[in-house]
Length: 215
Length: 215
Image 1 (cartoon, rainbow over the protein chains, first blue to last red):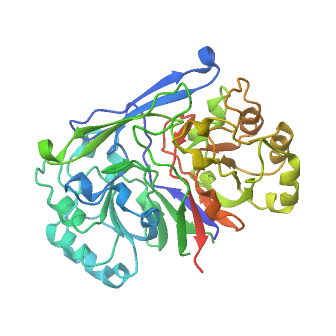
Image 2: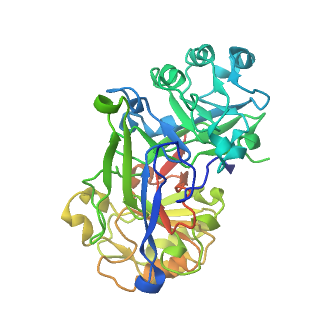
Image 3: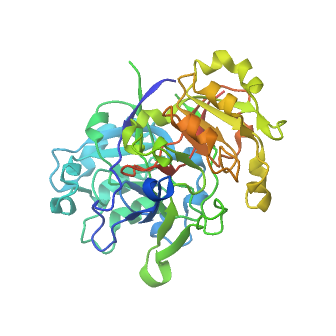
């Protein structure tokens, strides 16, 4: 089927924002046209840089890594829930109207609009997170991934990461640092977040995209 | 549409094969469960490690980089041409029977079977390459990418990279180190090679996949 592809991914560069305490990626020229007749870059980045997925293995020893998932797991039906009016916590009540849809989709993405702060210090504060009750509710469905347009599924200063743990324990992926989710509101679409095929990886930077039916 | 996804990608690991002279990727634990309560890896790899795409910028200064392409460019209709009986060069005659199909597809992949040598020294020798005439013929169609299940579109000891130049000059991508193309022979399918969103990148490791219609 002919799809229109919509990019939901932040750009990778050496001056991009990273989780507080992490190192920014280093992107350096191994070869350059003037000197070598070609350009080749070396990338030094973590499995959680930029728009990326978390596997259960990230927090839970012995649980599923990238190598445990069939590649088809990273592609499926999706919806985006509008949380742009939410200030602090995304409560259960926001999810319940989607009960029937949650039985039919693979990925649920939360549009908060917080990606407008990407590149500024505000990006790391006051982004909405799911309540533990809402996160637990999601895991009752056969979904594969939960995505956010903010830096984390938990509060920036969380040490026990309750939302991460509730979701990852059920072998559901978390996708963080998504952007442009406003472009896929109020529609059914397909979504993919194919990771690099890193042996036993706990996560991976991805090119997250939506597949929209051509009109 | 419900698709079955087929993986056409080699695994990334610190002991994987790389182009002669290049460094193997370094994949190291930044955090580990025993010590830190979570796992996070650091990746150090080039834009041409493993299954990857070459942009025109790789060889041609000032020409299109990853940032120049709309994300939809990396997804489209594909066919795989069986070259498993070819020993040395893929001549024009192999392509001509596909004349009509070449007007309707975006990606053309060449199955040579040479990926069976991945991980052995034989991988770097005697893989079939397109003749310059065949490469030039391909550029007469509106294709977006040409893919190979070998380490390069040119001979391993080539210094002037004629096939690369013919293809990249027309703003067509090259995909190298594909695998498992036997699984997508004799069918029409969709293909994607979404790159990491590296600013001005000359190429990127990718998770190359085929999308097959469910029967």
